[in-house]
Length: 286
Image (cartoon, rainbow, N blue to C red; front, side):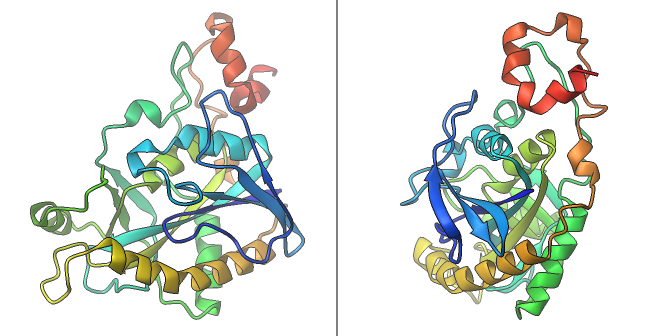
C-alpha cells in the first residue's frame, strides 16, 4: 500500500517524510502537475503531489487530473488524502474549520477531461457516493484527535475559476443549500474512482466566499494567511491517518471497474486498450 497526499494552495510540501526523493512519472495522459515526492511516513510508503506545482504554476482549469491520478496509480498509490482550500457557504463553517465533504456538484465545463474512458472504450463507474467513506471517517477521527474543528458531511461545489464568485453566484449556491465552494476536487475524485483509488477531501475553510456582509470580500492575501495557519493542522491530521490506515482492509472503491466496462474486448482499439491497461487490464485477462 502506498498512500497519496495531494496538497492544494498553501500546502506545497509534506514535513516528516523520510528517505524522500522527487520522482518523475510519465503518463499517457500528459504530465502531472509536478514530480511526486516519495518516501516513508510512519513506516508507510507515501507519495506527495503539489496540485498546482511547486511555486503554484497552474490555474485550477489547467490541472491535468487524469495525469495526476494516473501517475499515483502507476507508482502503487491505493489511497489519496486531498487537502483543498474552500470558501464557506454557511455561517457554521468558519475559517480554519475543516469540512469532510461527502458530495460534489460540478459547475465546470470539463467533463471530457475528467474521465480515462473514450476513444473506443466505454466505462461507467458508480459515483453516487464520490468519496471513500472509510477513509473519510478515519480522517474525521484523526482531525478530532489533532484538535481541529471537524464537520462531517457536506456538498462541495466545484466552480470553474480562476476568478472568485460574483455575489449573485455566491447567493445562488447558498440558496441551493450547498456547503463549500472550490475549484479543483471534483475532477480528482472522479478520476480516482475510475482508477480504483480510495479518495477523500479535507476541505479547509479559508473564507466566506463573498456573501457574508460582516466579513471582507475574499482575496488571495486572506486565503494565503489562513492556509499558512492551516498547513500545520492539515499535516498533523495526515500524519495520524497514515499511521492508522489498515492496508489489509478491502474497500468497494478498489473494485469500481469490475462492472463498469461496457465495451466488448474484441472491439477495443489496441492503442486505447494499451493506454488503459494499468486501469482495466486485470479485468480483460479473466
